[in-house]
Every structure is written in C-alpha cells, then in structure tokens.
Length: 180
Image 1 (tube, rainbow, N blue to C red):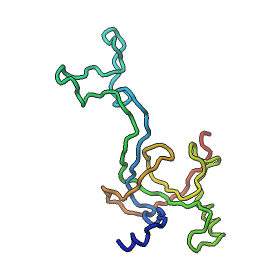
Image 2: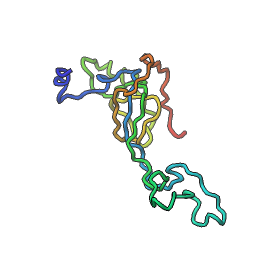
Image 3: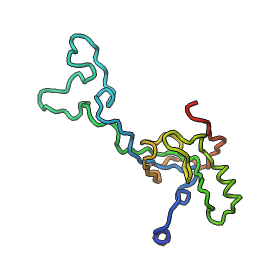
Image 4: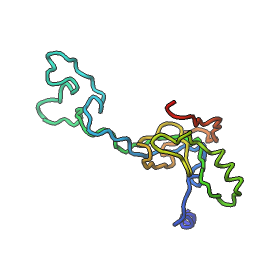
C-alpha cells in the first residue's frame, strides 16, 4: 500500500481508479444554507391558533421551559438552518462516465468519439444552474446534500450493507429538456 501511494504521489487520481460501478459509498457534504429561521421551519413545531390568548405571536413555541434555569437548550429556538455537514450512508454508484475529449491511455480517436457519444448525459442546453458536463462524472442513486457545484467527499462505507456488488444495468438515462 505504501509503494502504491508513493507511485501516485503528485499524479492525478481519477475516480475509476478508486471506485467501480455498483460499489456502495458514503457521501459527505455541507447542506444548502437557509439562514436564520424560526422554530416552525427549523424544527417543525406546531403553529399556535390565531385567537386572543396568543396575542404575542403564533409562529413561536408555546413555552420556553421553567423559570429556573432560564435557558433550556433543548427548547426549539430560532437559529441557523442549513449549511451543516451531513453524511449520507450507503449510496450506490450507478455509472462512472468520462466526457474528456483527449484520449485516455492508448485510446484511438474513433474510440474517443464513441466513448463520448456513449457516456453523454447532458440535456439540451445543459443542466440547470450548472451547464454542460465536460469531464468525468459519477451517477449516484438517491439524493446528495448540498448546493449545485459544492464540493462533496466520497469514501468507502463505514456501515457497509450485505448486498451483492453487481454492476447496475442502466437501460436509459433521460437527457430530455428540463422544465418542459
């Protein structure tokens, strides 16, 4: 392992050298930030009825706790929502594709064109808020935390599931126009 790490030092490591299609991974990312929010949006507490006994507001908590201690940290207060680091466990890699126009290894020019045509996942006009994918990409089953173009970390699963690691059979990847 040490010799392999030394041989890769200073070189570009691509994702297909680490993971394969069908592998399970953990995804670590920072969620979308939503700013300072009240307890209804932040924790989903019940909205109080709008009648005369709730004259101090209805989108707040009913009670903040006893008189002593004056601060209860388990009470759902308003505060920062989103922009927290989260880990999604056991996401399956469906496809690893490469849209780089330069030949990889001892690939011929005709093979490059076939590979780009086979691996193309760009809808007409590109992806919303992203654009066209022009390099290597990974299709992962499920949702990923965070905003578009935000850095995410992929790692081997900490809690691996006992499932067969078969290569997934992708029949069709939709590249239809978005928003139509």
